[in-house]
Length: 373
Image (cartoon, rainbow, N blue to C red):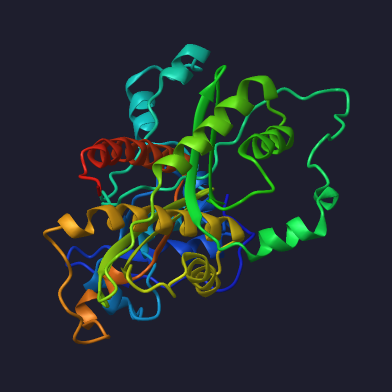
C-alpha cells in the first residue's frame, strides 16, 4: 500500500557514482515523509546510508561554506520501496533481518528478543579531550502522594550588604562534573561553579539538586558536596607571563544533548583575558539554533580544556605557530566547522561509551602532568 501522507515536493535523486546507482539526501526524504529530526532512521534502521564526501557535496550543489553539517545519502531504490508501502524489511536492523532469515518464522520469545544485538554503524572516531554527554535521565517509580517542595531556600533572608558584597566579588568559574553511581542510580551533571561564592555552599546546592530530582538526600548530598569541593580544591589558576600575547590552543567540542551531537574545533587564545567561554557558547548556539542546554555544556567543556592547557602549555612541544592570516584556506573549512548530527539511540549509546573510555584515559594522563611549584 503506497504512502499517502507526504509533505512538499518529492526529493531529487543524484547519480554520484559510475555504477548507475541513484541517491537521495536523507534529510529531504525525512521531510517528505514527515519524519523530522532523525525520525526516518529510527523508524527504518535498516536503510542503507552513508555520509557524502566533499566532492559529492560539490556535485549535489551544496555550498560547504554555508552548510557545515554532514549530508547523509540513502539509495533511491529503497526510498521508492518505502513510498510504495513495502517498508517492513527496513523496520528492522540488518542483524535482526539476518537472524530472521536463518531461523524459522516463529514468534521470538522474551529471551531471544533481549539477546538480539543492536546494530550500530561504524562512525569515524573523533579525537577530543573530554566529551560532554547529556545528564543521565533518572528512572524512579511514580509516587502516589504529591511531594511538597522544601527547597530552594529563600535567598531574600540575606542582608542587603552581604548580597552587595557578593555581587562585587570577582568571578572565578570552575568547571565541575558530577558523575556518581549510588544505590544503583547514576547521576551525571556538569556546570560551572564560582570559586568565590560565599552565600551558597556545596551542601545547599546538593540539597536543592536532590530535591529537584527526587533523590534520597541522605545518600546523594554528601557525595555531591564532596565531589564539588574536591574539584574546587584541585583546580588552580596558573597566570601566564605578562608579555605573552599569542598563546593559542586548539579547543575541541564533542557535545551530546538528547539525540543531537555537536562536534567542532577552533583556536583559543588563553593569554587574552577578554575571551569568555560563556559569551562564546551563547553566540555559537544562536548561530546554530541550539537550545540552552548546549550553552552550559559548551562553556563547561571550554573551561575544562582551558584549565588543561594552562597546566600543559609550558611543557607542550606542539605549540601553534605565529598567526599570519586570519582566514583559513577553503580546503580546511570542513575540518574547522561545526558539525551537527542526529543519531539514533543505539548510535548515541555507543558514542557515549567510547567517550567515557577516552575520558578515563585523559584523566590518567592528567595525573602525570608536571605541576607548577
